[in-house]
Image 1 (tube, one colour):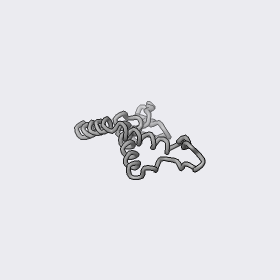
Image 2 (cartoon, one colour):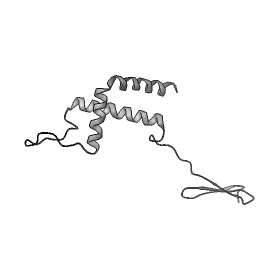
Image 3 (tube, rainbow, N blue to C red):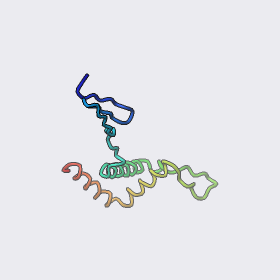
Image 4 (cartoon, rainbow, N blue to C red):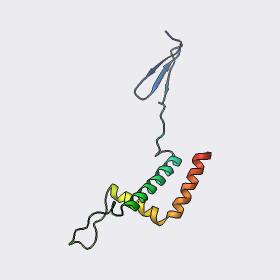
Length: 111
């Protein structure tokens, strides 16, 4: 047998040395963009910019169709609502979004 044998369980790594001492260690995982703050900000800024661009190309892309007998449009729900709000943020707060994008670019390039 080997001096140290390793057996992978579904979520934990069990290592046995030559003295038969078992060591449990947690699995190695990578973080997704949701749990890393820098990546989360990057994803949010890119989502805002994408929604603003799409709304600029097609102004009614996130609006629901209004029937002729209705005076006000229906309340937005779901993914369309999130995209509509992100496009509004991009339109109305564009200088701040642009400054955040420049800061993100420096962070990605130099850090």
